[in-house]
Length: 92
Image 1: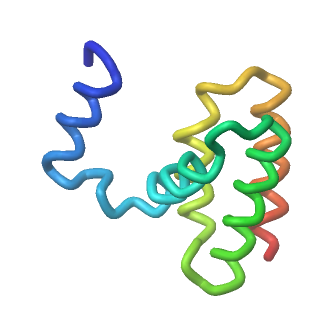
Image 2 (image 1 turned 90 degrees about the horizontal axis):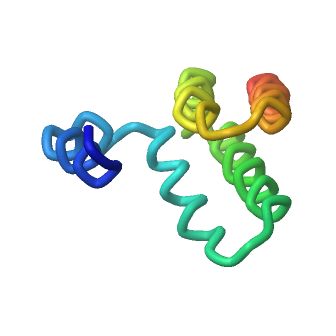
């Protein structure tokens, strides 16, 4: 992988991530966070995840996948915060 686009093209072409709920959650949140603060972004992620858990479209495995996708890009404090939020969402 030379860059994200080549990774995306290589893995998207075979549909590997196309129907992944964690990836779709990230896409949805990314579209809604343009120009927003970090706090607003976190609120959007939590609201979307809570909605998905309540309507049955987001599972605990999906939350684990979301964490695995996003955690490497976060610093230690934010990673711990996300981990606690994921744990809270799993209890819904």
